[in-house]
Image (cartoon, rainbow, N blue to C red):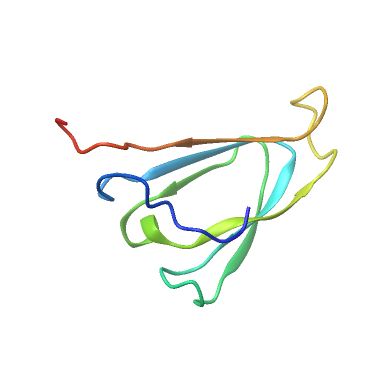
Length: 91
């Protein structure tokens, strides 16, 4: 998944929680402008990222998935669970 921002929510006060399961991936995160420098991090099964505050609107994405790096899923592959509040509190 290329660099993108998560902007589908009604407001951006609540953080986004991302859970990686299965094969490892190379995750890239930058700043709030698409052309800001980025940093790459290897995410393993069970790793959790929390995007809050200024990082809430950081451009981010997955550059590649490393096949056969986890035995969690019988057929291999990677699952990402993304948890977010999509409506304003009390809505």
